[in-house]
Image 1 (cartoon, one colour):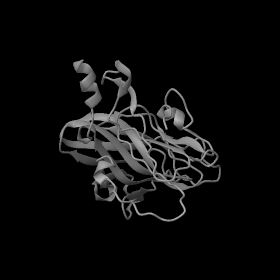
Image 2: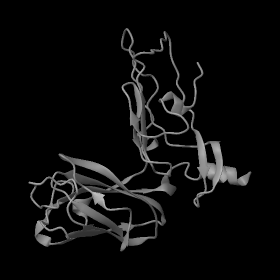
Image 3: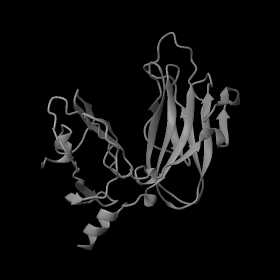
Image 4: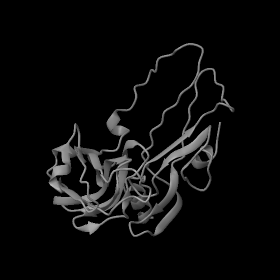
Length: 260
């Protein structure tokens, strides 16, 4: 069988965007830059594909190629993107998988996970800071609180900086700073519950040595409930660093096209 473009198979066209349907969709779409993550799904419930001996499914991995300065070199070039897949099928009797699965290091990007509890944390006010199993919680009870910590970079490179941050009913607005410079817009950490979520702080060229990540309180969320106490909660479990130069295939397509 021969199908169509990858995005068309998952129910979209001319690229991906985030959407969810009953049988297909893109549940996670972070963007087009290196290090961004995507999750797409399709269930062949209404359109099953029968097979009796074996089936092989391959995905198109072509797309746009840009230079680091944003110049487009190609719109449909072969790219060594990191793609992992899970397939579920029904059959009359169980059959073991003969070929071994690729090892985890070939399927998962080389993220460096740092438990934030192990970092040297400076908080203002100090009394609201507590260490947890993997990270810390901060209940400053004031809208202009701040919390910061240092982390060390061993090798120069382009890093994607992310963190697992807790969003709660009692959280507020916080602005992120990297080495004293604001990055991104203010974060609204309010949700109507309690959940630890992945938050990306984008790509940054970092030199070896010490760097500082700081969060400054900017007041209450506009979604804050009228009877919620003014806690301005901030919690974090992990700091996550991904050096793009450590990913196999990084800049490979760019170099090939540039040589032509």
